[in-house]
Image 1 (cartoon, one colour):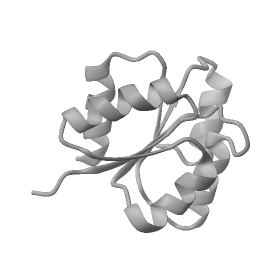
Image 2 (tube, one colour; image 1 turned 90 degrees about the vertical axis):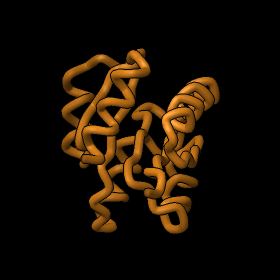
Image 3 (cartoon, helix red, strand yellow; image 1 turned 45 degrees about the horizontal axis):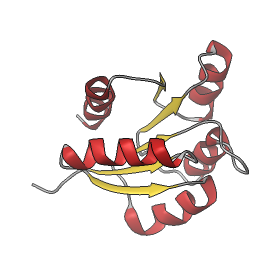
Length: 120
């Protein structure tokens, strides 16, 4: 069985390190990007099974990145992972094409479970 591939997009290097370690420890193949533009380039070669994206990033926001992914017709499950606990922002992420929105901080086991559930 091959490892599930996850693309993590977050401009916070500490968050990238923690989430990268968490998913590698669970056997995922991880690719990480600090901005939406490089994440869109990565998708062409990496083809993730699931994407975890921060919403608030400089340049291209997480919502804009998700819209581009969906406009390309890609049906990859996408989870928004954001420090903003605002129902309107969460709804904007769903409207952009996210399958789920989780608020940071989130217990590691809970984050992994949400991702694994989407991959079922």
